[in-house]
Image 1 (cartoon, rainbow, N blue to C red):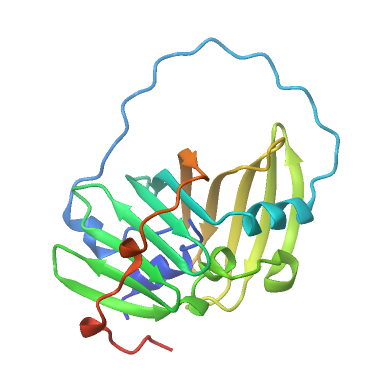
Image 2: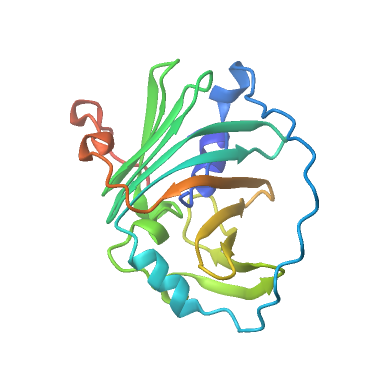
Length: 226
């Protein structure tokens, strides 16, 4: 397995991916410079301690989802796409052109596919942080090591360690809205110390994506790597 795909797998958390060799062959997608905005009034301070039970409830109540994502690679490059989720077990990261990467989880296998090179690699879901989002029942404290849970301004920050991902221990920092507990973004620090950040927008928790989006061609399956 290439080092690029090792980093990619350690960065998969819902929602999180590292570009890998496919991105080195195409120019990055860079966002337009946002207009200057009038500073907003500070949000009311919420002194209620953050609740891991509410985070578990948020994820366990999520049956389907569709969202736009922006990924910021360790070298600062940005890539956009659409994230589809159908619990339990199914997820798809569809990158916008010119990126040629596609990642699909069908309930058992995670496939990383380079559509330009027409190559792919398959892995067990349990080897990636995807398992935390795709399990039939999510219990964060049981499934991973919680190292921190705190409020930071208007947000809630959850920090986890996962020792069972491919390549070694990864650190996962997840940000939620401080009032609704809605998922906003996450950053994965892979075993080599590289940070990959993914932010979500246009989040639709009522979406029930078509199951056809999560089908992996059985004729092309290679035994997932151990």
